Image 1 (cartoon, rainbow, N blue to C red):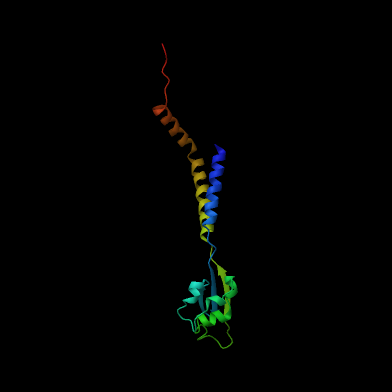
Image 2: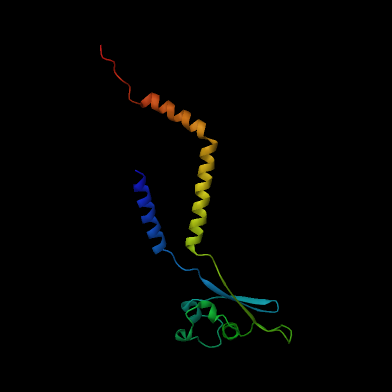
Length: 145
C-alpha cells in the first residue's frame, strides 16, 4: 500500500511543479522621501501610467532585475525627484515577492504540523471514539450451537 502513496506524492509533486510560476520582480525607485514601485513585467512596463515615453518591450533584458535602472525610474516617474534636495539621486532597488508555490509549500507545512499536533493532543479521545464505533457497528461473530 505504501508504494501507492509514494506514487501519488510523485504525481502531485509533478503537477505542483508544472503549475509553478516564477516570482514577480519589482523595481523600487527612491529619491529622498519619494518612492514608487514598478512591476517588472513586459505588460506592466509597456502600460506605465506616468511614463514620459513608451518603453519598447524588445529592448528589455531577459533578467527582470537588469531592467531596474535609473533610466527606467526616470522614464516611469519623471516627477519623482520634484521637491527633493538638489544633490539627491534616484536609487533603484530590485526585489521579488514570494511565488505562489512558496506560499503553498509553507501553508501546507503549517497545516500538516498543526494537524499532527492536534492529533497528538486528542489521540486518546479519538481512539476511544473509534473503539465505541467499532463495538457498536462492527462485525459480531455468531456462535454456532
